[in-house]
Length: 257
Image 1 (cartoon, helix red, strand yellow):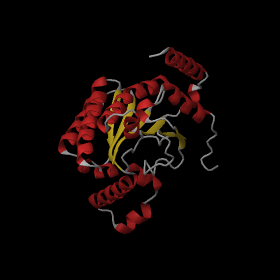
Image 2 (cartoon, one colour):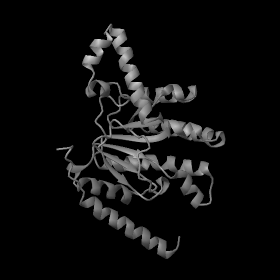
Image 3 (cartoon, helix red, strand yellow):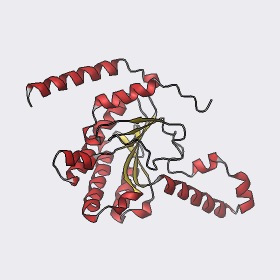
Image 4 (cartoon, rainbow, N blue to C red):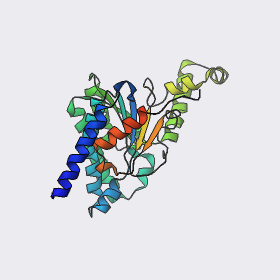
């Protein structure tokens, strides 16, 4: 590392400390959703392989959760694999699935996070389903940040699954279609989502410069704030995280009022 890079790193750390020192913890989002975008483009820019990009993105996750822990965040939803990602070539998808399994195992073994899967299990290989189930069971007692791992996740799929669950529940209880139609409201649908009993995201962060949700938590983000960051996910720094927190704290949330 040359002198210029060392000075730049020092200035970034000093700036991060300044931002952190002025952060009002009373204004911190309780639930953050993260669209971790840009692994492949980061790898391409570095002249490396796609697999290396995914590994670098995976290594960023625990660091990110550490920052969340320092700022009193209670729930984090990490979008690791969308339903659309299954259309990727097998030479990319198979290693990616292995990397994601390693991420889940690492989070469960850490001891600080309570792991919860959000997504459609039936879309996933049986081995990954087992890993997710074991991670949820072994961390169920943890009194730390709830980490939703969105794997095999799509916003429209979640709503479809919620409606299906609601219909099956009504059938099991012997509720008629007329009675169900009379009772359906937004709260009932919410109880059948993957994130039932959790607060909706206050803030959604998307890296890599893309400014769209791509189907991420379509129901839950109706009143969320969004923060779009140009940096690719593997290069996401604490100062970028703190800027997102500062930006969120400066907003006045009206919820339509």
